[in-house]
Length: 144
Image (cartoon, rainbow, N blue to C red; front, side, top):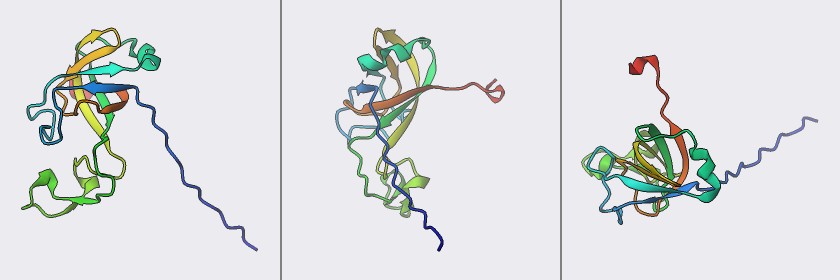
């Protein structure tokens, strides 16, 4: 008799490393992309993650990965850019915050470092948005 393999669901646990402190207080007030008028904001890094800041300097470009905590997780199709004239499109083909796992990717510049706080921008994330990771932007020969 052939043994049947059983697949188990993988549960991912994210531990926020910080929080965004921004002038943007509501979804309605948030630009769709950082380049569309988003302000700079403070990223307050949690005490446990503060040692991970070692090596970052003002002027660095980083990718800030956020958990879009006010996103709808049951939405699978949207009108891109909330434009009803555009056809419904699967969220994996859009930058919609509404998606099964609402991770936000934000390429920003570190403007200033003040202890456990980074002034970064521009970033379209709302005040209180959890940050799950910070990654350096890697330079390639194509960038030069």
